[in-house]
Length: 458
Image (cartoon, rainbow, N blue to C red; front, side, top):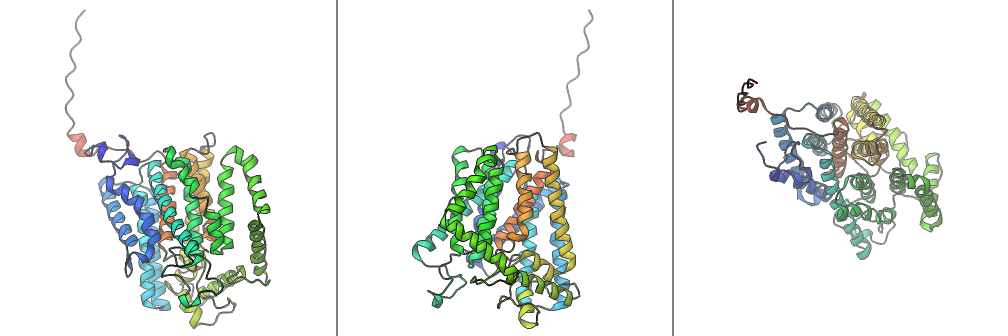
């Protein structure tokens, strides 16, 4: 190899693996924290995370040009990104939403799939999956530190969704961390819990391994303080799946978790809140400011807007504009943002993108199930299976995870999560990693083998 092992990213070392410069490994670890900071670090649309995503994409483009890898995951990520841009431009020309927000979302979506393609191309082995998990771990520590600061001081950052003069009104005590809106913080915590489960299984540093579990301990309370019932419910699903990985968890852990939820007053209040949200779907009354009924009506309004746009979509970031400028048949208590990634994609980018995203999700589920079936005799906690298992869980949860926040496609952590799932898919595609292949020039310049001495006569 032209690069020494010492020049290879530390978590991805191995003589048989294609080398990655050390700075790329550190960049991968830092990128999740940049995603959490979002618009707080940067100038205008060019946040530090978007700059990092662009740098990683250019690095991946050079890596692809050098090695000419053929990966279905890589070309799928590029194809989806290109399809989003084309559909977005068509919907923008047809429906004419506000241009400023539309171009900003097109940039965000483009960088989302550029980052996905970058992580797929820069993948080497399960150690690369671990590198990203470590980055998520440090990001979770940062996010929880800001959330605890809010709880201790009673203050919020400047991007909080309520103005300072609203202090003391209902909702002011809900924490939002770095993300402005409490539901977005809930979505980030649930996504981080998914990645922590993968990191826990792959981590080989015993001192660091317990950090993945420790960082999940305060998550239920932080989710409670965001006021997100759906976030708590999804976190509970992650906990059940995590326990199901182990035989003791299936026998004892899940039952113990159910007892804890029922025994705690907060757990019983959570169950009541879930019942209220489900009841609101059928027209029941609830004191919650945003209910499941509102989310369902937003979905139906999104379908109406899609049909009215001749199935082309109301354009990037056009859902709020369409909700405020056009009459819609379903009442949402003044909420005009989609509150669902599925609604956002379908209503804004048209039926074609909805079908493509659905097919990509179905394909990812099939890949994960096939990998689990082919490796049925191996331990579930091993790298060949655990990534497939959590990819399956994350893909099935994504429609509900995408409901945690007013919007999805323009969020940095959402882009990071999609890119992380894409890299997991790359691991499922080729779990043994990308092996070094000698170039044609190296083969031509091989030293001539010494002549074989003739056999001596006996």
